[in-house]
Length: 158
Image 1 (tube, one colour):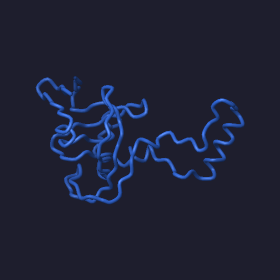
Image 2: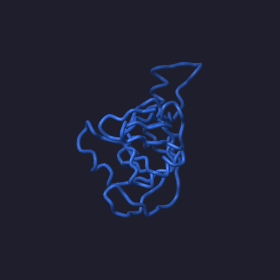
Image 3: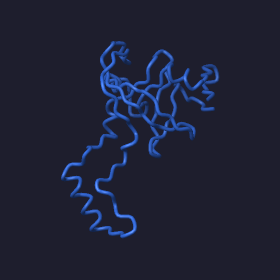
Image 4: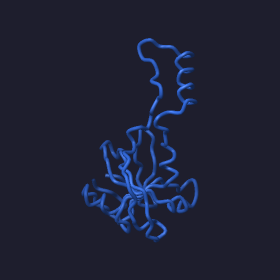
């Protein structure tokens, strides 16, 4: 059970890093901010500059047992690419064509792999750095995982 503060938001984990997500029952779909997706962007295959950087790492920090892989992909398993664009209702209320992705994350020690749409308008809804969020969990997610929100106590029962 997670207690909310002033807003219905939760802290999810990605590779040991915490990110705030809104729980919004007025949205059917899960949404991600484009800046959140960009944070995890890695170039596949690696550029010559990146390969050279990792070669220098191995030269300066040699280890025969565990050499640093070239290239070092840290975030490869966070997103699974999906082809195509779907028209969904975005945070600004407009129905727009949004790219989709399967996003892998953890919440309260449980792993999730869910469909999200990248909403280009979502970054504009963070009123300050203190109230920033990386995405929105919509009603499809809540129903699928049988999450119950008690708005009187501001708690989520998972």
